[in-house]
Image 1 (tube, helix red, strand yellow):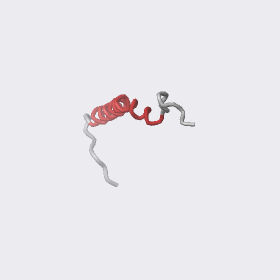
Image 2 (cartoon, rainbow, N blue to C red; image 1 turned 45 degrees about the vertical axis):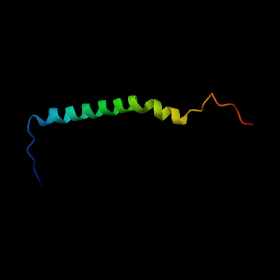
Image 3 (cartoon, rainbow, N blue to C red; image 1 turned 45 degrees about the horizontal axis):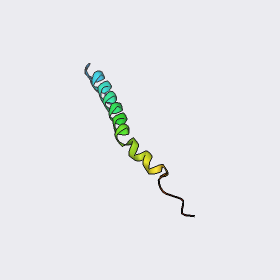
Image 4 (cartoon, rainbow, N blue to C red; image 1 turned 90 degrees about the horizontal axis):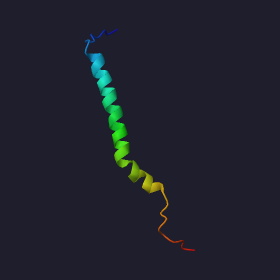
Length: 50
């Protein structure tokens, strides 16, 4: 069994990384969310070609 020494500051570093990753995901969704939604929406400007 390998025992690792965990520095007292490692807990705050892990929490900071989790928070930063979460904020990064939400920011990316905010930036590209409209583009992704537009790929799946129908365009209302085009007339029916029946």
